Image (cartoon, rainbow, N blue to C red; front, side, top):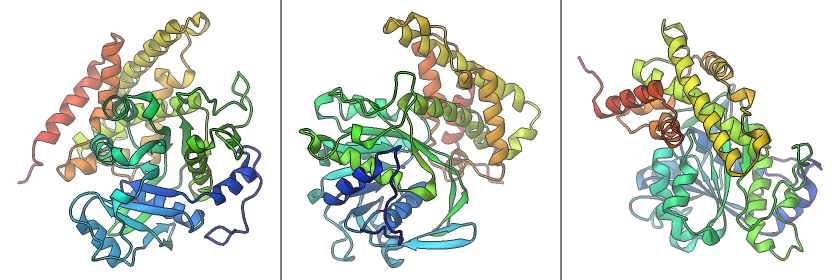
Length: 411
């Protein structure tokens, strides 16, 4: 079977055990749902449809009936502009998250009550994730997989506490971080900045080691055969997780890679700190990312936030090492989480994305809630948990909360 985009098939990739993964991926029909159809979600859905066989359904979860109708009026196509080259994808199914069913108005809609969720990609804003998953919860089973690909941290903990408190009925979770630059121009997705997507699989409550092919020091190659493979007595429990990983690794145009969770946690923390500097400052100052570099006090504010974050992470790592009796690692903080490294990364990203408008600024301009609770708010909660002061991070948080509550100035 060839790829939709016309490729001759899948090369053997020893890093992922890929040929065996592709054969089993072909055998069982999968259904992939995408929740959050902004620029990132649309880019992801577009690449999924162009990369996996059409025998696998891709269901777009539209927020409202009006949005679903607008999509249908575009012949059910997603279009992406990457460096002036526009490509389109089609053959999607649609669901409506809010409002009436569209079964009578579009032949490509489906009855959500009849469709269990095999794999759910969540690119919705962090603040909308909990209510959305609560509503979808009855369709999610222990064999389902949820991929969280959003800004901020803390969504997984929130979902476990409020939606999936019972480990035995909890779905599999994949956490990811995205560095692609995207925005919407009317109904066209503009892929403005080529980046990457890194993801990792959260540990299995049943004890299966998804990273078993790695050596204790982290050296080695991850293999999807460690998830499951045909002939495994527990194949049914893990097949959707395996197929989700397989689908992610097919997204070559998005530069996707599967990382050990220790690596991913480091990447997520660094991105969190970068966002806790750039997003609130641009939202408050109503400027683009690069403009904050010219502000006289940017260095002192960013230095303070990065130092507070580094202190929080050091306390967290110390506590976790103590809990597990790992005395050798109690004082170890990865160099990439040290304040100077975090500040350098915030400056680099602000410069690299200088012409971009942060998502937090966009939300403020539209009068919407921001992701501040999952960015600066997450650091504040960790600081409170480990008795680490976070005064500057808290000040930015409080100012953004005030800005959310007030209408934009109109003169």
